[in-house]
Amino acid sequence: MHHGRVPAAAPSPGSAAASADPAVSWDPSPSTACAAALDAAELRHRYATGATSAADHVAALLRRIEEIDRSGPTLRSVLAVDPHAVDRAAERDAERARGQVRGPLHGVPVLVKDNIDTADAADIADTGGALPTTAGSLALADVPTPSDAHLVTALRAAGAVLVGKANLSEWANFRSGSSTSGWSGVGGLCVNPHALDRSAGGSSSGSAAAVAAGLAPLAVGTETDGSIVCPAALCGVVGIKPTVGLVSRTGVVPISHSQDTPGPIATTVADAALLLGVLAGADPSDAATMRSGRVAYSDYTRFCRPDGLAGARIGLPRAGLWGYSAAADALAEEAVRLLAARGATIVDHADLPSIDEIRESDAEFTVLSTEFRADLESYLATRRPDGPRTLAELIAFNDAHADRELTHFGQDRFESALATRGLCDPVYVEALRTCRRLGRTHGIDAALGAGRLDALVMPAYPPAWKIDLVNGDQLPGACTTPSAISGYPVVTVPCGAVDGLPVGLAFAGTAWSEPTLIRLAYAFEQALGAQRRQARPAFRPARIG
Image (spheres, helix red, strand yellow):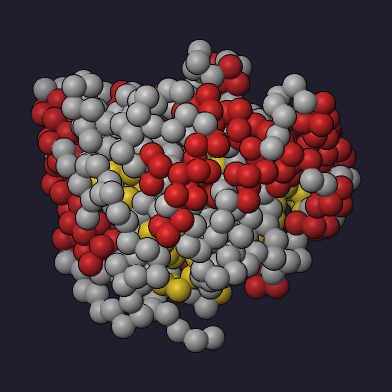
């Protein structure tokens, strides 16, 4: 287990330490299994009644991380743990005993994705100390982070205990077009807790896998195009990708200011809504959030209504967003029948007029490549001066450490981004305009308006594919690109499983429609029932077929 700073050398994904052992036997202790079964809502109740202390619960989760993430099925979902986490939890217990409760997450353990800054200096007050921020890259492993991200400050203010940093697809999966999701040079290969030879998705792989495995009740991921929704769907948990601008990106290693957003991952819609209320809000350092002060809610759980489907109008965008996975479609069809049975009006073939153009256009890649170089170099300037400052320096670092960074895939996306010509380039400006047109006015908003719809519903992703470090991810289709290029929200909820592999149902809407999507997703989750909604991971070893 990593305590504090990441070691200089991480195991390669092909090593026994970094990949799941097909023959592993695993017998978790009863105390950690009990801790894993508690969601945030139940945990808050136990804290309030004195049935459980935060210090005891955090200690149990740290033991579970050791048992499962390191020496058991070897998920590699947690990149680093805070060695002071139990002390911080004990402080929250002492505050509660004095009648002081900081906020809705007081004493609740949270993992944050390791592209989100956590202060890595003991002299910064109330940080818990010694949590690096690496984006999974060895280039940042020894470069301290001087301050917390805005959202981390909000988590601490709400009383959360940051137990550690979650592994991720290195550089949020923007280094290569042939990458393997869940792999990073620092953390090794994160795998799916339902089947250890299957992908955990990307790029918030560790955040979703850890929540699914009961290593923390809540985690924060980030998404540019699919990076919350994909791993949440594949690992069988709830993910909310918010409207861009609802949650601050200050202190988050960027890809694109047009599309990036942090968001919550949890086992239930109510827990995800609870975390979203803590994360949402204006940040003067992130201009995109300034409108969120008027549209954000401090408590999104108010929208969790069991009757939330009654009277709703839900569209099915069949063209392009269904049909890529027969298994996922079958479960989604069952879910649609349940939506209708609970009072929703279903409008079939509520297609996006622009869907064919979206699938054929390279505008999104132009936008991401251009913004990545500009945004990343602005971010690197905030780190300590002994680290890399430019994309060219990162490329050179990877070339110099190719035996540890470039073993399984290259850095073609880095190289494409290096060749871009800046945010004033007319090619970029037109590509951004194209993305907004295709995603919004001719896309999601057009479909919603034509059918007078509250939301669009579709399979989120196919069941998890087998990990292939030679050929990279094998992904036949997904639901996220129209929402990504629009900057619009998506909520994914487990809707069943195929051969033990979870499938998510995605609810997508227009800007700032999180209250509606949460209402619909919660009502669906309650109608589906806990047993079918989420099966505990089986940690199934690798098998043929």
